[in-house]
Length: 65
Length: 549
Image 1 (cartoon, rainbow over the protein chains, first blue to last red):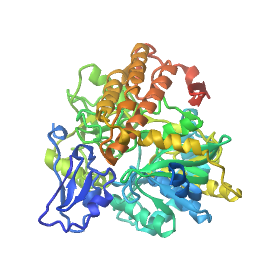
Image 2: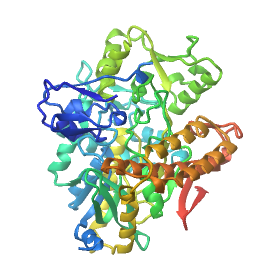
Image 3: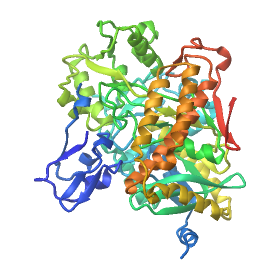
Image 4: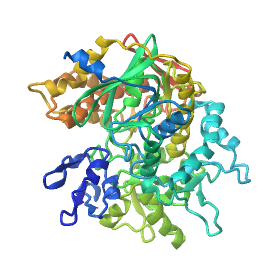
């Protein structure tokens, strides 16, 4: 259940990567990237830290059934 | 430069080291620093987001002495002094209740906002089975951790993020320091301290899964894999209740989150698949009895085929209350709660919320004296109590005592250098393997065994089989290869999980009764009055020892 980052809005500031408690995100040349999607526990820290509000969450089917 | 030289060059020395930068760790670090100690605060994660508080928390337990008998120190002490908890009345009063004003003052100072009633008084609610409305509701719960982190850093605490501590160092049965590796760059580090406070929580996860089958979709932080038990146990400290400390809760179906406290206390009705409100059969307080009764009751309904599904019905709530619960309180407990609700089309006011029994979690308590010092001299436990309130208060109290004791010491203890070398080799080994298997091939089977043999119904044969299988799994640890530093962290977490799983299974085999924990034994279905006492576990000569306290 990883975060979805709107790359059109993202400023590549790295706050989401910095605050992810599980090192699920990593910074790449193209901006923040979800590297370990299955290790995300949807705590919301990346969205709390995002200064431009470009993080949302898409729950996998396993959380919806 | 030899390996040994490089290790000694990077030793960090502090009067007090705090392990774990969650609520308890923040409390401990602030208290020790306020007493003038040099403090290093270490966490595998990052201060701003670590621990269960990282994603938010919506309520704080505090006594305000507002008048009713239930709003008093005595009421809290009476509620928690049950001998099974292992907590003395004195430690409950001194280390928790008396620390509440200090903790509240810190929270207000850093900018935590509390929910108020229309008359300006604090809005307070009742928690599981408790006699009074002890829970103050937090308005800006999702950023509490960041606010605390700002203060911790501003006080001058040496914050070491991204450090997985793998071993406590001792000298003549006293704490001397610890070692660990940076999970981002794989470097090995040595820390020396006069006193260490373990503030790593009372619960660890990833041993079981809920119906989503995702071990990270847990109701407690999934990044805590048992170091709070494994490290002190290996160093010789005694641990209480590792058997019945296992815990669980009800969670929204498929969504790993706490939060039933608010839902229950505001008057929700739990329903089974037949639409029956059944909790009256299992607890005179219905849904508001002890949490263990709600889980046991729900599981019994499941066994009898009266569910799943199970629901929490809040459709009878006052419109304003249900709105407040879903849209103010619940996101404070987990920031993504409303995303889940939206994508699952959940509206508390319109129809009942489907819930499920969560995964189990490992639990237990480091045994301490009333000054929070464990049976290993110099090691303190900052996590003696329950919830955000118990964590920050207990941590604070441990910090005060550890700092005072450190102040009475002139020097640090020596560290055995050969021990450092051995630990460095052990911890970094997966990174240096030319070939091997992924940690996933080992961690998955741990859960397979725990889910299958160590669930909500158990028996001796099943537990013995679980232990045999866990011993077999342990033989695979040396085959794990890490392709990068992230996998190195996972490999070491897997090793922790095996250790805590083995100890938990062995402890559970000691308690030949049912009814005190979240699981039941089919071979001992009744409660044994003679076992109304905590089980103590410790290690001697590499063998586990157990004793009824």
